[in-house]
Length: 206
Length: 147
Image (cartoon, rainbow over all chains, first blue to last red; front, side, top):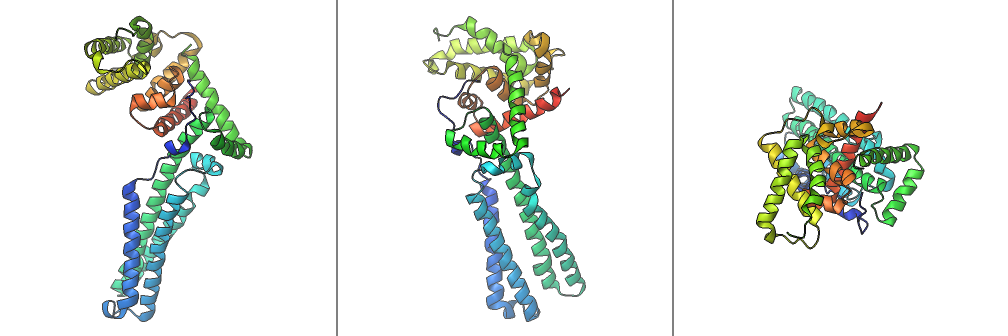
């Protein structure tokens, strides 16, 4: 294959997360925080039927939801702009570490749903909605959001791995990946395997 | 337009189109059509550089059009379509089974030896997309070529 005259900067390869998803997350997080603030300030007037302790718990949970979602969005913008060299192979193969957040969120969804149903059966309608179903929806959204992030990062990892295996990256970027590769025999084997298949394909041109 | 050596380009483009379409007859028509269009409208193009990008882009777009209009029947013997015999026949057959988007990336970069920037310009997408598709194509080929 013809080598590009200039190395390809990684910034030209990075695939950003869909903008609509960022916006949806920011709006959801802002909504959670706003409701939490409203509950804290006007709780007795708007949610009078809830016991003070339930209001406090609901406010705290919504506040935590909002902050967690903001944290995820900020983290993606900061870390997810580029797959780090030591996580490249992990994302490429969809390793278990890439699914931790989604798993935690997925476990919480049925917990909150059961809590909501329980509260509903006990006659606490608002607590069921706010404390149970809204939280279940928020965590389901977080799990879905994390799945989209994982998909985008895997595509990034595929692109970076390909450019690295074909020696198209700038020296600095390649050195970081070289270092990660030297510590992982599976990564090294995957690079050799990739190069072997590309060489087989290249042979049909001759 | 006169500067292009059509006879030198014809076999290269024809092999590319044959592998992309899996049909030698359609490939011949595509190449003929590309050259005819170039002669007719060549004044619109800057031919002092990137001739290969221009020719491959025209051929690729024509192949994509053809495939969209009436999906050409895959040739029962892709190797015969591109005139391949011997040890590389398996690879050619495996490439023919790849999705169109992966196949075109693989043919442009690994077979025809174009750079990623050139392939991205031909396909009208980013370098990252080209590289990611190539990875997917190679991964699929590896599975299919395993003994």
